[in-house]
Length: 259
Image (cartoon, rainbow, N blue to C red):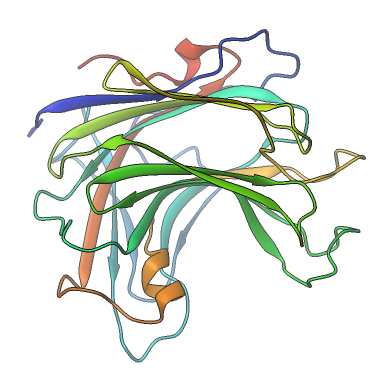
């Protein structure tokens, strides 16, 4: 089994949990998820030749097609992970392909929270699946966003977390306070060092009845190809691996742990 150099990313909020995320743990297998989403030429497969911890990981691949106008998801997902007002920890380990091209600024998402808000009373814009948190790679930087409030006039903020290295395993742990007003919270560690802390931010969409549960999705979403309507550079195949996904009411539920 090949294990490459390891770096660490964690996103945390050190506060008392009021409503905890459901506990979930996956050790690099395609079992236990509520589903997979691999569009067009994308694939999602369990492999044993690469992992953060023994004995397997999930490999996500997407391939660019200039004749295709749809989206490029290759993800696994777990449903109803949070609703507005919840707090929780969410973690995974991930590895970009060693030949991952970092020479341009197109974005490649590795994790997100998303919900079908098609029948939401605020949905004047007639959207359906809308993400709140997204985490992505842009060049060699890992970035994250907070988004929420009124879904058609949302509040959006983007933050740079730090540098990631293709071919190295990184581990990420997020604790977020999911609020549609200015009382949400993010905190981020990269490679064991605190990299970002933001409080009094909007982190999810208004939902007074707490009706809408958000999925947690992990993997590869080549959103830059879709949103920009073209591919920059010449790397038409992108691939990454994920392992040790977890979330719950405390840090230990989510942390992939040391090698």
